[in-house]
Figure 1 (cartoon, rainbow, N blue to C red):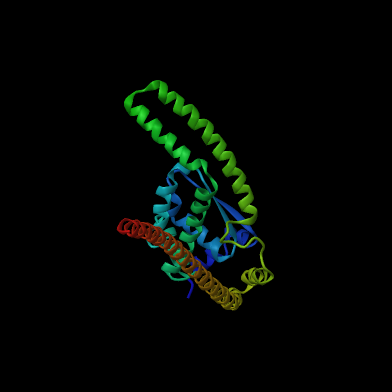
Figure 2: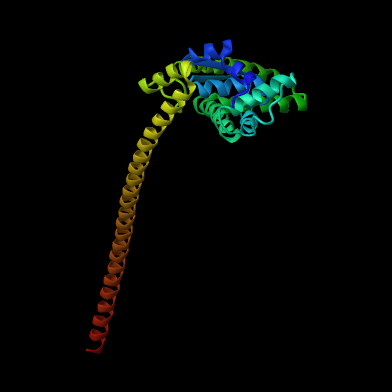
Length: 277
């Protein structure tokens, strides 16, 4: 049974506002502390539970690999909070959304999905990381001329990068990453309406949608598997054809060689016969 504190959190002003929202933007600081903070994790979990599309904006894109490692380790059982009472309330609330492993998987998937989007959509990321390394090397070697040059180049590229990222964030907030649906389906709108007045009914509706989606997914996976098997058969046939063609050419070369040897032998035999005469 849900505790009064967890129930109050579910009915809080933030939760009510979130239920009425279609999308929200989460800003991650330079250290990625969002993965360790109970309130931040709870709000992400709540957004996921209410089927609200989330866009994630990273302050320090150079730390994406480190943040990915931190997100992989995210665990709602280990999050921290200044107030012990708040931490216990949030912990109880998170467990009303599913098991710890289930909630962890949802939040990790959400955050890691966006680190992947950044890495995929920002080709300047590697150049920025290389410039950052150049700056560190120039600083340690006290090459002030090179240091200033790298800093200017880094600032210019960072400005371009952030403009590109900002455009992506604005665009992705309207449509979400690939793992989110571009448009809310009528079924999910019905779930959202039910969530406001009857969470149990909403869970039943979601389970029904999930079952239908699972059936569709299984059919799609079977079709993909069949297509891959066909593709493999075609590839094997092509490999066999190439192998046969290579063998045929090899035999032609060997046959030409034998013909040349035969002609040579015939010439020698004719010469020998002429000598005997």
